[in-house]
Length: 323
Image (cartoon, rainbow, N blue to C red; front, side, top):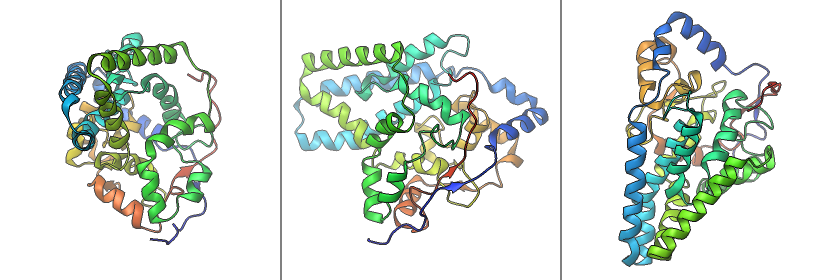
């Protein structure tokens, strides 16, 4: 358990991210793909159901022992809340109401945020734009671990700890790597979340609050669904920086596993990403891909060749209209 991961620095490249050129080629060859750039007609209702389910569970857990409360936070609530963060990911690309209604999408993301317990949706969108525009960009893409993370979390035990604490790193890293001014929408997100948390506490006590926060922390930590964090961009094969996963957990994660397809076409909602692969299989079938997020986590922890430094980085020129 004490062997150190093999890399001592990130994989630096001096080329642009591949998705921009791929997108141009594919649209020229398959213009029908543009027809998939439309809202997901079921996303609103799916998210509504998930939020209502979590509110129902808040009422049900009042009488649970703490042991069972934590169990259900991991086994059930962790799946729901993690899935809601991925719904927020989809909504951040305006897939709930379409690009003509950005305000509706932003407020709906705040609604989807409610069971997560901490204000997340608006800040996520602000940084996620940069993740797509400056994929792997040094000091711009906050999805890339810091040098400290790469240096310190380099043994199996430490990598396991990093996976467990990943929600904290995911939340705090942007404030260090690429701090941005707090926006009005972020403040509104915070006020709405605090108001709902206080309402739940006043109605049903502390246990529902612990259930929701536990669902978020445990579900985004060492959890099977969290394999997507590692599977998406960690360099399992030299030179490849984005990977798709085609396993069954896509059914409950809004097809986030179709990640190569997503970065090729960010404006296409998750429900239509399998169609992209079906339309243009020659662009995807030959690429390295994952079939198990659990195996991804296992390999990440125990393979010496994999670690926090297993990411491609590049220097990016800032676009003039940073959003």
